Image (cartoon, rainbow, N blue to C red; front, side, top):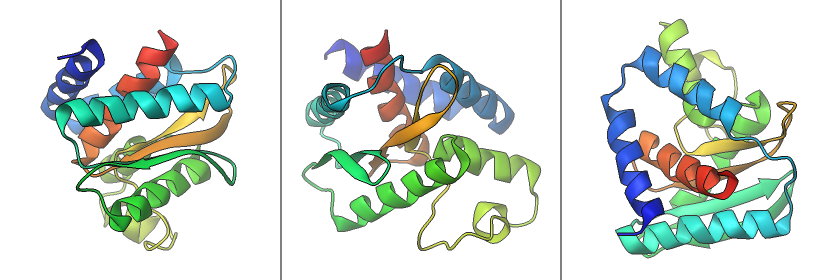
Length: 173
């Protein structure tokens, strides 16, 4: 098993064991840590290919979408993923664009602090266009400005998130 794939599995297990407050703190820390001094087409390609490689090695039925603004920089679908996964990745990405935070953070924050229906009922955003489930992570500059996102769909929410974070961490560190 390759190092990134092993790191992905370890992070999945770790995220599964966290309480909601600890998960929220962990994701906030990841957003502080995973920032790019520069981001270009080559960086998007490197991240996308790494996610694809992990998916191939671990036989994950995922779709991956990397965007800056309205431009798609990388998109791939693995065996077992369908158009529904493309749609979910885009909906999660819209949450990142709206909040400049990961979709897992937004969804978890609503769960913890709302108490009356969560994101779908309280955000006032159309549920067919936005999904605050794990799997989309902002492409952040050192200042904290989000310029785009990396999104994955096809696994459990925390595992989609873990796959993106594993790839970003591998590229950055």
